[in-house]
Amino acid sequence: MSRKIGRRVLLKRAAITACGGIAIPYFVRPSTLGKAGTVAAGERITLGMIGTGGHGREMNLKTFLGQPDAHVIAVCDVDREQREIAREMVNSKYDNKDCAVYNDFREILARADVDAVMISTPDHWHVPIAIAAAKAGKDVECEKPTLTVEEGRRLVETMKRYNRVFQWSTEDRAVDVYHRMCELVRNGRIGKVHTIKVELPSGPDQPGNPEPMPVPEGFDYDMWLGPAPWAPYTKDRCHWNFRWIFDYSGGMLTDWGAHLLDGAQWGNNTEHTGPVQVEGKGVFWGEGLYNTAKDFHIEYTYADGVKLMVDSGTPSLRFEGSDGWIGNHGWRAPLQAEPASVLDSAIGPDGVHLFTCPQGEQRNFLDCVKSRQECYFPPEIGQRCFTIAHIGNIAMLTGKRLQWDPQAERFTNDDGANRMLNRAMRSPWHLL
Image 1 (cartoon, rainbow, N blue to C red):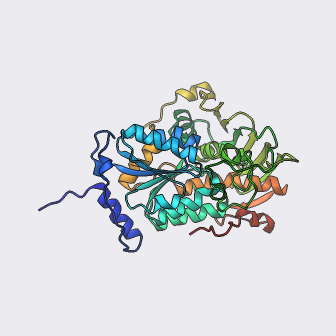
Image 2 (image 1 turned 180 degrees about the horizontal axis):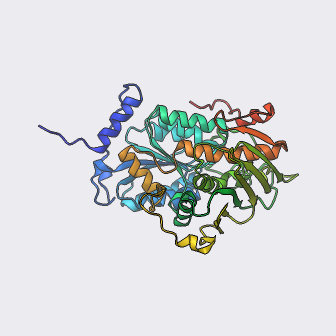
Image 3 (image 1 turned 90 degrees about the horizontal axis):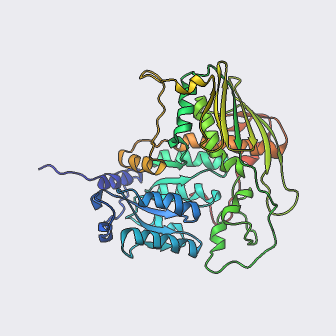
């Protein structure tokens, strides 16, 4: 007698295989039969949301709640107010009170009924949580970027070792103007590319207040710091503002750079490598809390001579080639080109067609969890993209022209710069 094996059974078998034959208890909660569309409960992907701040809720949680084959069953945040808002969103969607709520991400990872997690924490938590999730048998979608080059390489290796589906969370590959721009470039419509110009937002516009303040009630500040060095609480350190402090992020170069530098790599067909030289200058606050660059100019050189110029300004991406240029000025702004006829160019069936998912990164992630195929922004491609930002920050901080080996992921002319490729983690945290 034949039996139909459901997707979730296959996923659990894959998890058992990846963990060396150690079985993980599994059950389907009755609450998964709630109002979540017409997809059978056993065929829905159960999700835990780790990090439920503004973007974690308004973009990631909302999008998953709108997918009929996804079912959010747990939310986690170190800020009680944020996680309670998220729980209400989930319970309202499914018209029940079943959504579990946690302060510690490890409690979500310990649940056998969670298939996958969405990580929407500050940057310094991305890799530690993602690696722990993979080892717990979960597929992972994670906000970008990494905190360091070496940390990112560990993530790539871990996802491969445990055969996890992983998506770096960025919408750019689903945005028609960027997809179209990169396809036209890859199909030679502007000739041989010689220069790529990227502009990213400036910031911050004030130095931040380092004066210690009382920790707000319901905010687990020690857990928020996690593997980062201990520092006194101030409101200017947390939530949105973590981006301006190297202990937790890399400024706009890593934050917005994770979007537009990916476009540069995609169009340049260098997704699995990177530049071989970098130099740059940054303007930093000389006082206050924030220490990432507020303005910057960085120049990269690829092995074939292509130049990548990154400046603070208006979010923009532009490719210049031997036969013209194509780009836009402004986030998702309409494409412009010279000659203008480039924009109407058709790409035939034998041309280069870049993979995308117009419905976005969450839809692509869910599809890949089921198919076990690679997502459109997988670990290795993200690692190469974020590395460009990290070595740019290192070049600005050292003030040197640095030679980079993208295969070894090391500088070849500066041992001091190599020591900046990783950071120590505060005890007891470490990459599991």
